[in-house]
Amino acid sequence: MSAGEAPVSAARTFLPDTRLGTLRAQFTLVIFLLAFLPNLVLTLTARPGVAPTLMALWMVLVAALCGAVGYLLSGVLLRPLSRLKAEVQRGDFAQPHQAQPHSDDPGEIRALRGAFADLLERLSTEQARRNAFMATLVHDLKTPLIATGHLTRILTDHPLPEAERREVGRELLTENARLLALVQQMADAHRFEREEVCVSTRPTDLRGMLDGVARRLMPQAQARGLTLCVTGHGTAPADAAVLERAVTNLTENALRYARTRVALAVTPAGVEVHDDGPGLGAPLAELAQPFNAQPATIAGQQYTAGTTGLGLFIARRIAEAHGGRLTYARTSGSPAFPERDAERHGDPTAPHSVFTLNLPEVTP
Image 1: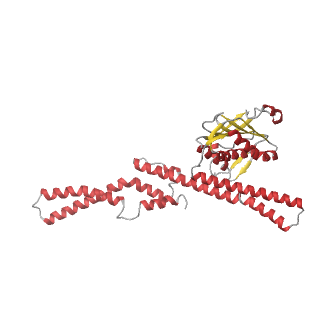
Image 2 (image 1 turned 135 degrees about the vertical axis):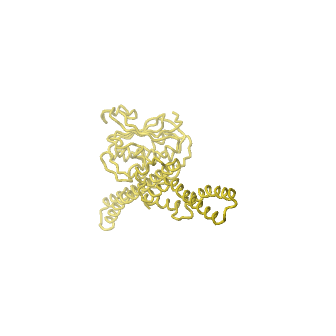
Image 3 (image 1 turned 45 degrees about the horizontal axis):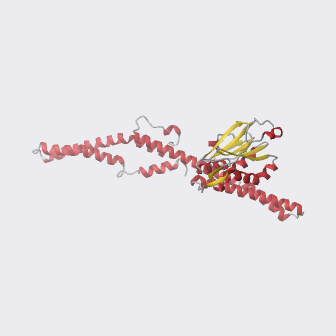
């Protein structure tokens, strides 16, 4: 069901196209009774000697006049609501200019218009994210599956020397790991989008956690010729396993885009991830969304809709679950990079990207 169809269905539910149960019929009846009953009482008490036929004709005339006045007044009172119903049924209420209130709209109708506009915006965003999610399934999952199928055919259809067979096996494991990581990331993003992140905090050695992340990702850094270092010391109340996932996401992103080096640092603010890559191509608030409907260009590489921001979104939600937040800054130089590496890595004052998982109560 499209965003334009949902309001139409809702309008038909709350404003049925029947005559007996409509607000206009009820308003007409109320106005009719308010006008007719006093006239009935006055007529019966003022001239008791009038002929019954004349009295009946007079009352019919008064009733018709009161009914007509009630019908006309109810139409005037309900005109803003009828206009809103017609706009929703035409399907043009979703346009921004249609969501603006008319000058004669009462406060209740203005509030209803605002509620409809918010609902349609949420429906549109949700539909765009679902479309982006499907784009991710079709594009990113298909690529490693095709590669895995190709490598499997090589193993089964061609006799290979032992060394080549082992190499194909390693590539199969790599593609499988890539596929599992993507599925896990999408599952986490889908769950974190709808549920609160559950954490069980206890005093955590942040330096030890960063050392563990660095050890696991060191082969990836070495394969790209990057330096990966860890600095700082501190502890904080945190769920080590959950927080480690956020740091791993940020570090993998940094290793993907860094030119020469990546640094993990414990600071009084929390945990920082530094890299000397080109930085974000869009604001963090825009990128750190699940199943982003817009494609993005990062470090000159085009990413399809739905594939960007999953790692950043997961990191942001984990930081929020710990009572903190995820921030991004582009700074000149980074104190996390040792000065002794300046000759090897170039100008230490060059711009660097810094992602910070802000955590409360960090102690040295």
